[in-house]
Length: 273
Image (cartoon, rainbow, N blue to C red):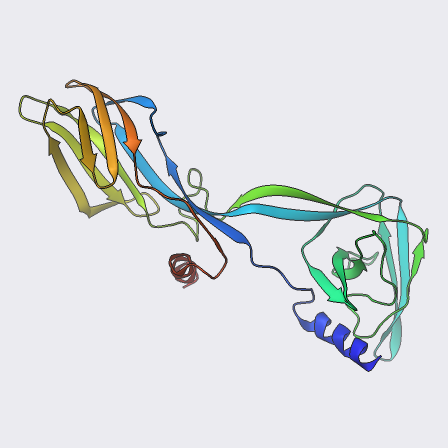
């Protein structure tokens, strides 16, 4: 019994909740093209535009849904008085749960409620069969008996898979955890001497970095050109437009757990300073 009480005390003081598992993060790229897609760029328009970003991959949101309307009541010792806890829940309402905890070899989802007085973060443990574990409330430092009505109500777990952008590459590219890659190739026309393309790099919030600007020239009759890892096939080049397709770009997505990628760690640290 002493071990169980100390375990509940420890759980109550770790941010008031259980253990959050590291999320799988995807490092990817937003581009204005697709490989092997035929495109047209007029003078001054982008042939290639690339930004990188980070997103939680298959971010799983877990919900608990009661099968009936229910009430949970308890009398909780509070210094020299007692606190009468009263929680109500609605049938079919989704209650989001972020955390899990293991007690006595059983893994529980933690479901948090707001009580009738507006106090937050009273949590109960739900096992895999949808039953509440008696004698445990996540805001009380001692095991607390409570009354559940109706006593046979079940709590069904469901999940939704989404991709949660840490940085939206289109709407809010200047977010805290955006990457640093942001550049484009711009068509500058053709003459008897050369086919002309401009390479420009930008800061992650789209401001031009003047030190990273380069004019590129290629043979005017070239059917295929290469810059860095980009291989571009030329279908037509005139003084006002370029018809082309990207054969390869060398961009590779990567997946890693939070805390495991040095580049992402540097970006995250820089954004908090």
